[in-house]
Length: 112
Length: 119
Image (cartoon, rainbow over all chains, first blue to last red; front, side, top):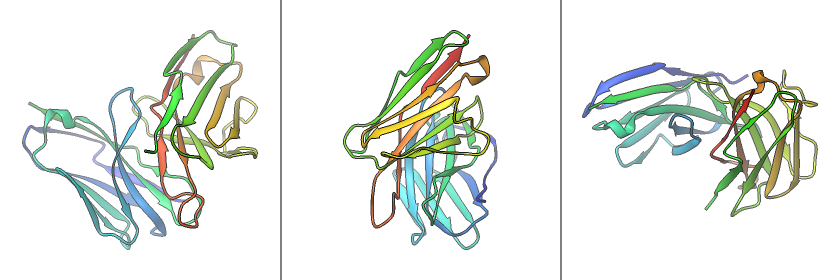
């Protein structure tokens, strides 16, 4: 059974810092991996989706990498801003027709 | 494209009543829909998977008689919480997926969620 772990569970940084969020998964037979953002009391916003054949995806200040063989992904946020404060969720889609499996998330606070 | 809506966005009900939550794919046909629940500061937990026109598949520990799921069309799935109790209070999120690349789906699109509070 796929398990997804995110470290750290919470992170507080001053504005302007670059930061890395980590995600690991136990079964490397994945179809894709996705990073989401969730604001308190809100739904999910998809940030980046990496196919299993890809190594990274970039969108603005965000860069996500994938090392499928080692079961790891990182989300890099450059020049963090207070508006980046949210919970970031990593989710993995299995190679079979199985639904997304989520990690518990990293709660990020960027202090002005 | 790929917009999913949920209705209502929040609901407060008395213990013992039933509540229906709708999930709609607005601009695509969703062959598969998923229902998740999320407790405060917890991650999303999958409750069930539903394919259009067939019975939902529930995850272990989810009572199918309490959480009734109907996926009668390619754009609508409903979750009915029957005889709701305070412990059912949670954030319920649906997602929808479509046929792509020979798989049943390769990406899920999420609704904005429904906050249920049972008094």
